[in-house]
Length: 296
Image 1 (cartoon, one colour):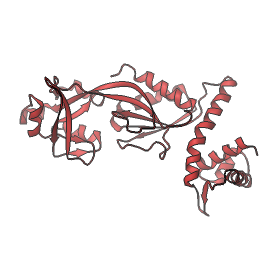
Image 2 (cartoon, rainbow, N blue to C red):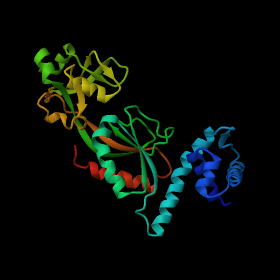
Image 3 (tube, one colour):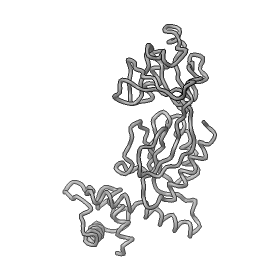
Image 4 (tube, rainbow, N blue to C red):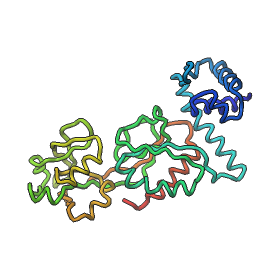
């Protein structure tokens, strides 16, 4: 078996979870798969798999090798399809991670069009407000709203969205509406961001940029939770405009302190730093970017 075939067998074992399943995928026998993996491990001088009677799992070296070799083989497959005149046939999978609210409002509606454009594509869409490790979680593309904290990542900024300070008419009728940011200190402000009880919300005044420390009786690492609390009249929240697409036209939703809130947040596509990004990921990225253009 040549070296490229060994790599294809290696990927099949990882993705199917076993030698027998990999043999079915590659159209070979289980002994042939074992032989190919053994030859690859001997050539590399490391064990790629932990083997037991029940399952096969990657070693740390195997995981790193998989993360580097998968996009390389995908690029080879894409190049072969282009040469054979089938470049638009994007078979295979892509895993996309996106914040929950942004994903629900802006990415989910695009997915049917993406799959219609590329029927052979398989999309694994992960909606989570947790910051995911792109390599460890085997994520091909991350969509970020706000700062990108991965220093080695490849970042493509595609849009920006303004911040808004928002409450419900129900809340303001009961507690009054602040006329300047400092008054937020006496209001119930719902804090997004996890375990922090206090948040520093950014504002701009005659003397430049400043922040106000706010707190309230509800904190969460889920933007959906904070959004629901504000809409129910529990307190005041700070959101990106992209998180409140429909609510801004609702008669019970009121933006406040508009003259003081001028900050924006970037919307970026992020890839883990690899030697190359597969054509599949590039095409999906271009499709999503074009679909999002002008929305914010």
